[in-house]
Image (tube, rainbow, N blue to C red; front, top):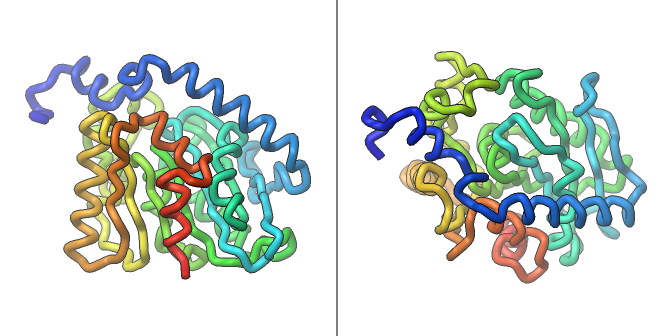
Length: 271
């Protein structure tokens, strides 16, 4: 893409996943309904606060074995929409294989800057490291997330509680975002373009696989391929997973299916 020659409308379209996937409202509604049912069936450890703000809460779904790995999943929504509660059903895939799972919430823009959002995810992981055992979660943590959550996964892979990562359809270079409608609420600063772009950071030498759908917008596909290439050049472990035919909204559903490509791959990220 020749970003400098594109109009504002073309730049907006380059990141507008909802417009690119016409049936995305129906896909979202089905996922939200399934997540509501999922939470209702597992009411034991929901809405646990890790910080002072209304969205600073965890949903925890421990496994039968407290030492089982735990998939921590960060929801997407371009850092400015959605909730953790709306993604709980995606945990069904790894939980069917005996894993625990956990979903942290975070404050959305413009009520929080992206710097503050990233700090909240770190605080959430601090809380889980200190308190997970009391709730039946004490195995290795695989950090994952979709879209904005994929970005936050890459940003916090270096947290000491995290054993490995699975970033799904993330944005890993913030520079172009500031030229789009997304920045109306994010208000990214020059400093944040540097500090919040995983493609500009030193590589974290932990296993992190990066997944994207081959039917996604080019900007997201390119970011995923570029981050994997940077990590590969630094000999950091982790696979690049192009999910054939998946768009931005169908790729994440792979986690809900115990036989889905992403659920199966997650199982390979810890011994």
